[in-house]
Length: 377
Ligand SMILES: Cc1ncc(COP(=O)(O)O)c(C=O)c1O
Image (cartoon, rainbow, N blue to C red; front, top):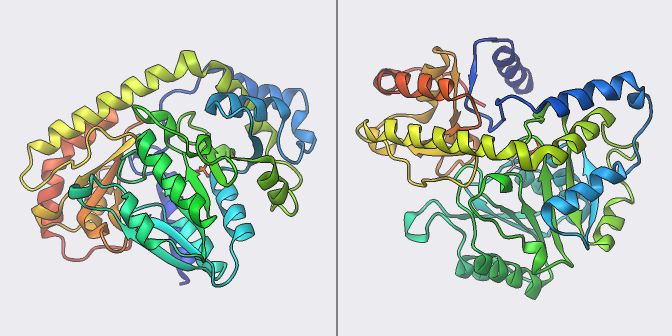
């Protein structure tokens, strides 16, 4: 069977399991605000979904996204999830022979987009406590060349949960400016950070900030996000976008409703996910060889390093799936370091986290003895 069929069947099977505890995709499983559900049904009842949306998004949503980021002088292109924006940015900006820089670990999809565009790829290793699991200024300085076209920075980093300080962001953006590179600042997890700085404030000309509604608001299946950049950059993106007929109207209406109630609704989500992180850390401490090297995480997830326990992360993922618990293997994020860790998502009901913590000791033992590990995606 083709690989794409195997992969699709894998996720289809997971999504058909009504008992599955989703601790593997950084999706948000805490109850949606009623206002958002109402907006979704209103968009059907008032026939709004029978129209195409404006090509760059409903104006109210564009304004609310800018206000949420505090980037009122910039411009917005609403996309079908942040990933569509990333695809469009990588394919529009990169030509064969251009140089693309990102971190390892990081998020792999833009790497593949750049690769498909013919770019040369540099994945700079950051899985090292000596550098606080961050891209250092020296590393970026050494890596850039005149051919560097895009620096893709995931911040907070998925999977690590580290986040850059205002000074670090200023310096990293400064290096991009020196060589005229675009800085794609992937801020998908910004809302979970203890504090977060936007590179666009330092380097507005060529920073592209991505925005997602999948994680903080929990609309992953509705596919809505955005690119935020200078009007000149958005003009370029608007020339030949993959979806010039406008993003999903129902999703945009839900996103508008979410932004309007965010100040009231989101603090509770943050509180639950931080409590969940503390439970995972406590459970992990009890097991020989397991550590949580980055705690607290600035994302709605955290990694557990299993390398000292002598287990294969894929085996642990497989064993837990038998208990209806999905976590993610490190190999999803990094070929080089993926054999060392698993990732657990935390915007979930605390009972799910408790079930994970209860199952973990036995799962570690079983994973140690598992010889045949199935393919994970
Ligand atoms: C770093 C990063 N960027 C972008 C995305 C995609 O976000 P969206 O669901 O808005 O397409 C993800 C999803 O996991 C992600 O981890």
